[in-house]
Each structure stands twice: as structure tokens, then as C-alpha cells.
Amino acid sequence: MRMRKKKHLDERLAACASVNLGWLPDAVHNDGNADRTSSAEIFGNDNPLRLEIGCGKGKFANTIAGRHPDINFIAVEQTPNVIVSAMEQTIEQKLGNLRYFMGNAEYLPKVLPADCIECIYLNFSCPFPKTKYAKHRLTSERFLPIYRELLINGGVILQKTDNRDFFDYSLESLKKGGFELRYVTRDLHNSEVKGNIITEYEQRFLSQGLPIYYLEAVNRK
Image (cartoon, rainbow, N blue to C red; front, side, top):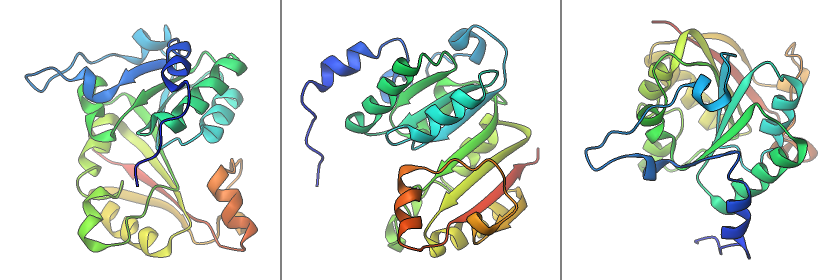
């Protein structure tokens, strides 16, 4: 079911222009190319750059950007109804190191240069449990080449999910895709991982007593 457009959404998005890098498909020209933009052009500095794909309402992105003002962050989300809340938080918190793209992650190599990202966060991505929709999973072979292009050598993917089948799929897909699994746990909140930021979905799953699955995969070029 298509989500109903929020009241005053266009006005709210316009008010967030200072942190909104735009709608990804719109950045691509008729020839299939786009003007790639460096982190320095976006943020005015050469700080390390990290990327969250599927930021939702932005709790994670805004929290981690606030904790690490010396790191730049870009968050991506397909749904304008949702991302507008994230952007409003960024403006309210006056975070100069967080910006947003709207749209599908497959367009990212068109607008960002290769070897520019040190870390990609995949927090509770849709698992698309039906096999016929597997290509839409953010750890499918459709997306892994994109991550490998954007990530620096030694850059990492950090994934959290509550879905065991999706997690197992991700483990196999990442290994086949050339990533090195550095750390894997099937119970994040009883693991040695420090500094975890609990997302909106994560809090819901924890309240239901569900385990959180977590992995760290390293890009080796």
C-alpha cells in the first residue's frame, strides 16, 4: 500500500534545503551519468565520510553525527514522508556534519566518487523474505558492487537486523561478494560491541525479547 503524503510535506522538505542533497534519480542525466560531488564540496572539509542506507526517521544518523562532529555523514532514505523528520532533527540540532539523499541506493555511484566512504551502516533494512524479491535486499549481489566501489580499501559495512534468515543470507552474500567478515554476533546486546546506538526499530524488537544480529564486513581491494 502506498503511503499517504504527509500534510505540508513539500513545504517541510523545502525548509530542509540546507541539509537535503536532493532526490537521487533527479541527479542522473539523460545519458545515465551525473555530476559526482566530493565530501569536501558537500561539507567544506576533508573529514572522513560515512554512509547510512535506509535512515528512517533519523534517530541513528542524528545521534551518531552528534557524537562525532569530526566525521561527515550522509544518510539515504527512499520515503519523503519519513526522511523529512530526520532532516528536521538535523536542523534543530544544528548538525553541520550530516546531509541527506532521497531515493534508492543504486544511484549513489552516480553522485559520489569511488573510494570515498569509510563505513556503511545498514540498520534493520527490509529483509524481503520472499525469494522472488531477494534482489531488493541491501546485501544482495545487486548492491554489493556499489558498496565495494564507494568504500575505501579496509572500509567496513556494519549491519544490524532482527531477521535471522536475512542475516544468514547476508553472511553468505558478503563472503561471496569479496568482503571479509571481521566480527559476527547473533546477540548484539550480550556481545563485546561498545557504543551501540539503539534505533527506533531496535527498541521495538528488544521490548519483544528478540535478539539483534550484527556483523562487520571489511572491504578488501
